[in-house]
View 1 (cartoon, rainbow, N blue to C red):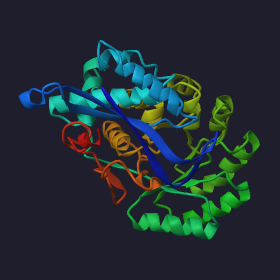
View 2: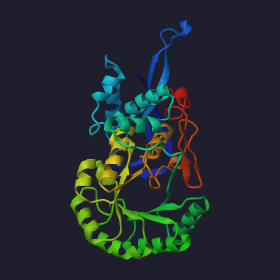
View 3: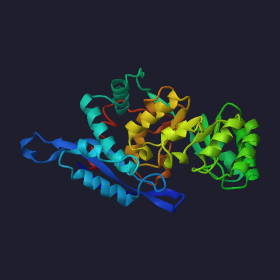
View 4: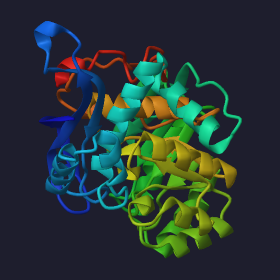
Amino acid sequence: MRLRPFSLALASPLRTAREELTEREGLLVGVGSPSDDEETAGDTTTTGVGEATPLPGWTESRSACETALREAAGEPAGPGAALAGLDARETPAARHGLALALDDAAARDAGRSLAAHLAERVRRVDRSELPEPAGSVPVNATVGDGTPEATAAAAERAVEDGYRCLKVKAGARTLEEDLDRLRSVRRAIGPTIDLRVDANGAWDRSTARRALDRLEPLDPAYVEQPLPAADLDGTAELRARSDVPIAIDESLAERSVKAVLGADAADVLVIKPMALGGPDRALDAALRARENGVDPVVTTTIDAVVARTAAVHVAGAIPDVLPCGLATAELLSSDLASDPCPVVDGRIEVPGGPGIAGDAFDGLL
């Protein structure tokens, strides 16, 4: 097991609940086997690559992540035993990095894609009738804060680029200002493009009720995190009295998937593999949501290319998945490697080679 720290600058600062970030720091995780070549005896050949990129407010800290992974690297029984010792609630990013590396290695050893490997595990363990993974997945474009004119123009550009689903950020302005922006977007894109609204937990209960009532004529696909993450009861009440679907995102940083589903607070669950502790746990959460009548949407925590590509595989393993929040490469000013999953006409192809992307990432370690 090998580790390589990295740091990537963001294209623009990211404000979280705790701080403003200008870069994404993480660790690459490699698992390998001894070389059989006499000239390289004692060396290791990379057979699985993972990524652990913690995000404050969603996962453990950068230092806690590295500490957990370095302790795991010292596990005498090997990476498999080390994975069992990583707590997905305490150190989800660390577990994600090692779990992904091991799944990449296993999928490559079996000669199948990561998506196919994850689906096969579900069939084997849960005896579920899961179809073969999709060849591509739909993705949404994200439109940030701006004037009504600027927001509408950005939305039009996204539709021209082939996106059929847009997510518009709200909550940084007054409700009236946001409604003006969203009306402008709906006029610009017409009635056939899906419109999602992401409030990022900015509204109180009274504002959220008024927002959903006044957004209904715009036919939003859903409103994401209308209330603060901790107010799950309020979100459940809001959902019960409104016909506008509600998606839960930030609440999953504080509560378990089981708790959120049990609260009957969501029509859609936003699944972040890095925050849930690995692609295996993300797919399990998505399928559990489906069993409870809740649609899953896979997104990232602004990850580098290894984890981002793995998230595409998770989405590909979910039957008939809704447009996912995986078009996030442009949020980084640089990346660890070339992106094997570019967005084309609002969709991303799921790599069909072995593992995450064959041996495309081996040189990173």
